[in-house]
Image (cartoon, rainbow over all chains, first blue to last red):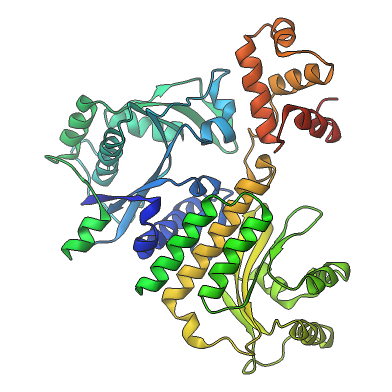
Length: 212
Length: 243
């Protein structure tokens, strides 16, 4: 299992991969979680997809997209500053080229039942590893994210604890919380160990095409 | 996948990133429409009280359309409200649809060069909708245009167009969840600004740092989609947010 890092200038070349990811997101965020998101046909997109994001797409060994996460620089609009400032507890939203914001994290666990030794889904740990790799590749020192307390527990169990910005708040039907994730080399190696992998999981989709 | 389609999509994605006015959105979509072999496009959103339209349809047709409230009658719009996937309409081969009024509507549209097309329905949340249409006066949408590969493309194009328009041309709070309303602090800072107070004054009055005052005012400005703090104050007053 590996992840592909897809940047905005590559979208046209990898339309099928892009479509598969938007399809996965619709299944998770609209059909399963019933978020109030814009959907068309099988796809889901929101305003933050318009800001030139990088997508990390988790691929099963069979070559199917089974998870994804979106990364955006915090120097532009962010979910935390522009949609959920209520989670900042009065502090300033991060606005720094060394901080990335992650959002729309999902793993379709119905597709992969493989568990890591600590009973976390191994796919989740591999996508976490890809996030740290991508952040380090972009010279980012940390990742900021808006998530919920359920995901916060998963992060803690994965040994990648969220450093909270403020106390969780009720947003709609979920307890939402914002915080920072460490992207240090130690964090990366800890994640490799938990996922039971020896090295990088993030690949460029262009390289795969060249090899095929 | 054809390399030509790849280029069309990438060029569309690249150019829509920088579109910042309805006229620029219209230009970007017009080019894509022609490259895909259609003649005209229309993006119609029915959310608030006033419908929003960006299109390359003849102006004589679109102004007539809204004057007569055709968005209530238009079978394409009605179908887009209930349909989930892209659909095609019009054309020689298809049986006449709807009642006599609706058939007359189609006949009238045809005189403006709109005979058939494909429409992508978009669910915006809270029961609201938008539709992205590619149309032609060809009389018929050729089936090879609708092969599965293209379907994804037109869907993604429609959703991109919708999301970019929502991001650039809308009041940002319109599509967002709770938490995007003005906070108490933002209202406070705006109310003092409306009273003629400077940032330094407000910092003292509210007992926060001047930098934080600027932060709250900026957030309020963004939420109300205003170009300046002055416009933001005017907009907040107009909406009765400061009373």
